[in-house]
Amino acid sequence: MTLHREGFIPLSLVLVVSAMVLAVLYYLDGPEIALWIVGSCSAIVFILLAQFFRIPHRIPLGGVGDVISPSDGKVVVIEKVKETEYFRDERIQVSIFMSPLNVHCQWSPMAGLVKYVKYHTGKYLVAWHPKSSLENERTTFVVEGECGEVLFRQIAGAVARRIRYYIHPGQTLVKGEEVGFIKFGSRIDLYLPLDAEILVNLDDKVTGRETVIATLKRL
Image (cartoon, rainbow, N blue to C red; front, side, top):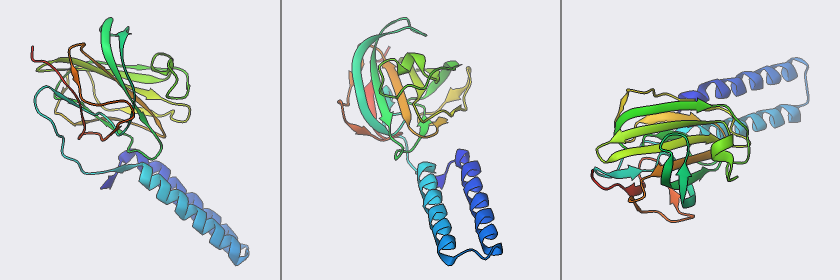
């Protein structure tokens, strides 16, 4: 397990600020209990942040046509909807909610060519709000593989306001390749063809790079 690069700055800030506060208290000959409180609180914050920015070592699972989970979390939506940004037709939407305790890296759900990447500014509704996928800050990706195209979307929540993405149109991805990171709780939406075989159920807990969400029919 390693720390994600997005965590280096916040973790460094915790260390620097803690060291400065402890140095001031020591210089002013502050009470020993104050030093213990500041030191303990700093350690707890550092550990919690390190837990949030952790990146476990995982080997992508699934075969050709399998769509793996792009993130950790819990399945909160499985329904037929009209996708209005790219396909403009009906798709099966599978939404995964990430709590602050989940790994917050995102991975490509399948191998293929990046056809579309677009970042949208927006609101910060709670991630489970029905309108969050259309009104919140978000980034939409479309990857075309051997069995067709899949759209997936990073969505910021009420707390998560720092979406990062690292891919661009024309890039070729391997299955499970890192594509982005969202800081502090959010949601991922997948839009799959209507004939896809969905292999998860509502409230299932899924693991990024390992859980197979669906199987696509060969073209």
